[in-house]
Length: 343
Image 1 (cartoon, helix red, strand yellow):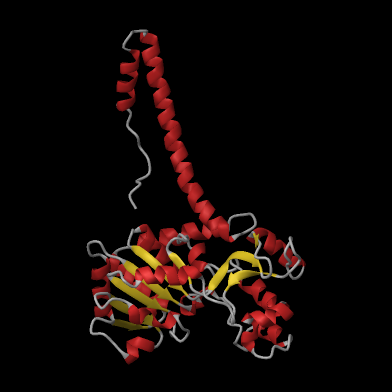
Image 2 (image 1 turned 180 degrees about the vertical axis):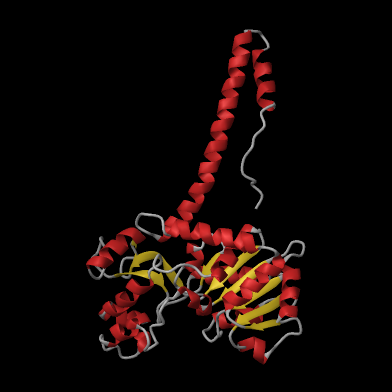
């Protein structure tokens, strides 16, 4: 695997590299999110008490309309804020910071890509997520903070029509988000440097066919515990298959890239952000990340304003007819020191 990792590192560090991700539940395994199908979890036992006709009924829209309690038993356990992103999630974020991330298609509903700080413009949540909540009848949106508060009191209902509300998670019997099809129609025509497929068995369609539709000029990479789908049935000569734990593979890759410190910094900053006091909402991580940038921009702006004021005082004290020209010259001499805006 080491030779393949070196090849991958070379591709990623190449000029104008573009990376696209296709990820599944395997990248969240190390986060501790319980599998509702596993008898080993308390969550499974709680669902069993509800006498579900089959485990997947928890995500069946028709069943939800009759009995939403099953889903909300699961939702309380899975709501973002309870679990921290994995090293793999932060690697996706790091690719964003390095300006090489082009898209991340995810089957996961845990929204941990968002929690890790990946901007929503880069994310395609094929099966939806907890990021937004709507009424199943009138479509009225409910903010996640209100929804979470109502969830503590019982089954949340629409404040407009009193029908049930649910997160924009794609249930059986519902169509996939329009964003999924719109962006894939665009992305499938692009030539990416690397397409990383991780933590998924590629069994659920139409997501399963995406890696097969990627351009032949793109190097496909599988980071999984076992080989699957197109990597086994129709392998390409350029495919790089790495069968191991996703976080373990990423740790080695990051070391080869020389990005270890950058990744650790993101992880530590992320933990502080998530564990900071206050009610956690999905919007918070994006807002707090943006607030950091705004704070730096405000400091730069205030420093600039102070220097402009000083230039005005100098010109005012001279009281000459050339005061405007002098002011302009004074401002031009001001050195603006701020955050590097290159992305």
